[in-house]
Amino acid sequence: MGRWEPDARERLVRAALDLFGEQGYENTSVAQIAERAGLTKSTYFRHFKDKREVLFGGQDELVGLIVAGIAGTPESAGALAAVEGALVAMAVTFTQDRWANGPRRLAVIESNDELRERDALKMAGFGRTIRDALRRRGVPELDADVAAELGILALRRGYARWLEAGGDFADVARRALEEVRIAAASLEGAE
Image (cartoon, rainbow, N blue to C red; front, side):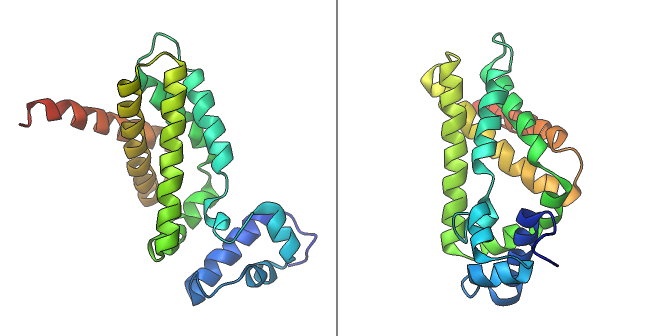
């Protein structure tokens, strides 16, 4: 594949996942990823700031979608409806390529302590983004905290389910949030 061919970012992701699977995350260099993709190391760094980011890229876009999804929810809607708006807004990034690469990406993350920590930090960041966006809507602090945590739980469950079955991520995320909402409501009588 020549350097002039399109989809450099996706080629880098596929090359990285291939190499991580073949020789492990720790034993793979950025230079090897770029070479496997038929690109240069400098092209790699135009798309990703470091080796980890080939697995976590797009976080800034997701943060923007979360904020826009919550802001776009009618003012009369409750906190969990606004969280649903965020999850639905994120769905545009859940493409066929992301679905196809998802299981390999998760396997690499699960095999490495540093990557699991990075994933946890990413989710915590999404939780803060949700909480802060809810607070800007006037949601009380504790309610915003709880709604954000439930939203992150729904995101994780929805993502896992989406990787298993595919389909429209927005629908999967809505169902996951509804399940989380029902489970939270049932805790009241579970003493």
